[in-house]
Every structure is written in C-alpha cells, then in structure tokens.
Image (tube, rainbow over all chains, first blue to last red; front, side):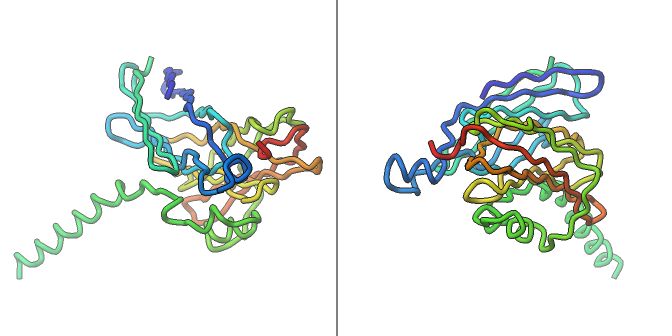
Length: 100
Length: 152
C-alpha cells in the first residue's frame, strides 16, 4: 500500500493506494467460469499509536487499485500511520508511513 | 460483603474498558446479509433494521456524468456526530459498496473510487450516516455513467 499522510493544522490528510485487482463476481464468472474466484479487499484499517482512525468494510465495487482519501485528528507530525488490508481470499498486507 | 462489592465494581470497570476496543467492527462479518442484498432498501434494512432516513446533513459529491464506470470518484462529507457511514448504489448487482466505522478521531470526509455498472439510465448513489442519536441521515447523488465498470 502506498500511503501519504500530511499534517494540515491539527488535521492529518491521508491518501492511500492499494494495489489490488478487485475482481467482482461478474468478472470472475466471465473470465474463469466460477464466480467464487472473485477476490477483492473486504476490510481496511488505519491506526496511529495503536488507536484506530480509519476503518472500512468494502465490497467488490471499489475500483481496481483503489485510492482512499481520509482525514483524522489527534495525531502529530512524526507519528506513524499503519494501514492493513484484508481480501476475500484472506491475503493481507500492512504498510506504514510517517505523518509529515 | 465489602469485598464482593469491590469485585463486582472492578468487573464492571473491566467491561467498560473493553467497550472502546469492541467498537472495531467488521461489517462483513457482523452484517453479512447487507453485502448480498440486491436493492438499496434491502441493504439499508439489513444494516440498520429500518429504512427510515432523514435526507439532511450528508453531502455526496460525484461528477454528473462519469466517463469511466470502472473508477468513479465519490466524496462523502458530514458534520454529524456519527457511529457509522455506509454507501449504497442502485446500478450494480448488489447494493452495498462500503461501510465505515467512525472512531473518536475520525472526520467524515471520505474519498473513494467505485465501480458503477451502466445501462444508460440514471444511477442513484446513497450515503447513510448513522448518528449517535440513533437516527439515520442520508445524502443522495444522481448521475449517469458513459461506460460501465462491472462488465470487465
């Protein structure tokens, strides 16, 4: 996951990109004949100092390589933002970025 | 007696301390039927147990005409003191797109890129904010998509 986090006043603005095909059931059925081959990110979390600041449960209708933008309070420059995604097949990826 | 009282009190305190962590909710596990519902009404019903919403306080920003249904930008904004935010649409095979859990430091200003299937007819995208007051607030955006995104 590519993460950019920047302080603006007392708000942290985040832009994150997850590399994922986000195959829908329809696409999987068309390409492989079995809709159970669909695979997409189902959940993403973001935390700072062990506290959740971002939490989203997702469906197959996010775009391919989806981009997420969000904002939160209660952090300062230099803190580490850690983000994790989990997909339908159980793959998971965690990346972190320092808040600038 | 005194000791028992103390024990029960500390028990309560322990439960109270656990609650904020339990706030982390995976809606795909806790509300599995939301994600298989085919209409917005059914999905909203599965999520909240009611579909009575007030259309105010939530802004959904999207282009009026999206060129590419494979990645349509969405912005959801609200100042409501909320527990959760969910996004639905009526173009794709299933209605639910995403659901956010709002935490202490969260700000409701989310950008996503979503897929929208297109058959040329206008699509309605609905964002629902579940306030801490227990009420549901909604924001709606109607748009058309030039090229569908789900056909692959």
